[in-house]
Length: 324
Image 1: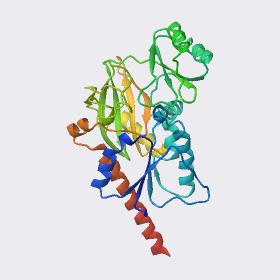
Image 2: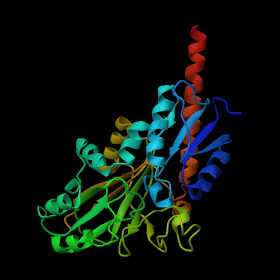
Image 3: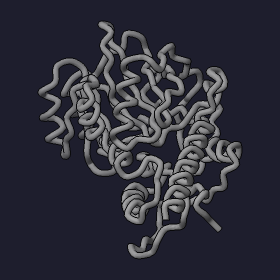
Image 4: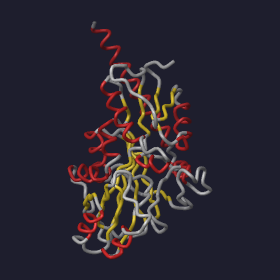
């Protein structure tokens, strides 16, 4: 039976759970698992006590869980409406499932982004493409794992693509067209942040495509190829980026003020040294081999964040009781 120290894990993809459960065990935290796919919510019924961790991925629809993202949105409203603490709650989740909103919030903090236009409909996508000069990419507004990202040299290439029988506009029909930033070297950088802490940054090789999920389940030999089929061979290396980098500090400010408790934020650097940020991953995963190299266990750090939250809430409760 759960109590105020129970960690409730709201998840959709079981393959990503083992590292997290190991981290919770190392911190001595008890947990309950809640698979968010089909279910029911009663507005007047209070949720179980404890702290909640949102592990819903925007790519859930690729695993047959089309309903999960919308159900999670309602679940977060229910939990927060009853005063439950959620790690990466509704504000963070609104960013997680909309790359267009990510672009807006990044600009709000003075962070450079590629030119981005959201479209609904093939004609609108093609019309937007005609306003771009140079190469461009398309992606689903609700994405995940880099699936569906395509690079184009011309509007004619895009027209052939959208008229193909296997064209996929994503789970909500919202397509982004985005300026393609040619990297100075063939990698992007992902910055891992938990709470107010910089954990590490890693370089992900882009020469093999855009499917760059760092989760152990997505690597080769694949632990779960039906879940995340990308070839993660030697894609990841440690980045020399440090916590005092100005871009990292901008990311931390954004997280503090926008309700993000943990995130993996990605940027690409062009030949002139300009850094363009284009993705905020709230349901971040960690590559264990890279973690061992830098001496950081990402999921253990998530568990430690939860421990700090529990201690903080316990101290606040004790102070309220003492004041009565």
